Image (cartoon, rainbow, N blue to C red; front, side):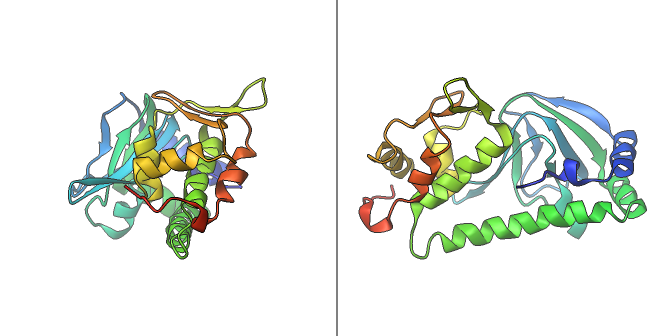
Length: 230
């Protein structure tokens, strides 16, 4: 089970970060960071959702969707480089924000906290590897299911019918941008017989009739899918 950065921190490090930072409220559509800039702040989400994305030749590629406890800006503080991606609020976000030098000071003063940061970087590497391997052979169902599982894990709310609601505004096109496929491919996968009407994507939420539907989605055979990736 994945553990968010904030949850992995030892108590004294959390207290020190809270004392060093300030709480910021970010409206939907506002940016916590912009690609290719040298902003020096680190943000730890306390509530809400934000998408991490890049522009490549006019095409949007979503790298991650951050939730409560996740951190943004830690890579630039570690290597001193430019922001590698945009971080845009999907919902109203409350974040603990602090300058990079204060973040480094706190982390240096609490060596055990470095393991929480290492876990974040490790997860990003594992996620990149997972997406690569799901392309060889191409398994779009597994890629899409892994993104949906991550949303359920971070934002899912169980409902009385046994399903799960993810109150995050991600459309089919966004899911495709995150899973490495086009919107039509996402629509095809969600319409497959073994998935049925088990997954509904609206403008404000994603609803799963049962968590088991993700197992069926991930089990799609690449040869059984349409070749269209547009």
